[in-house]
Length: 96
Image 1: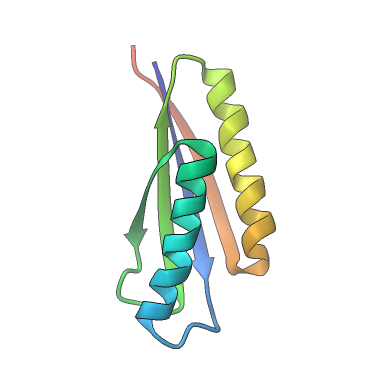
Image 2: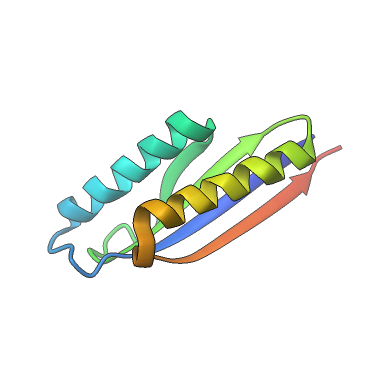
């Protein structure tokens, strides 16, 4: 049973408050949840107003399908965030 983990690191130089940053993070998380059926949480830099780290996790029965969906998630995030997305990572773990 494969589990996929995606991390998205954001740099938001235009955010002047943590509230403004959390609004951006909340919108992105909501979009990921609805389009890709991933569980999403802000996992780092919660107290910094111009940085964010989002983790997205999903589980399935087909590793190839999870790879494809996670790559789509990253491409959609790159398209949506542009230069604000500074680093992405995808890890897939097989639990047998």
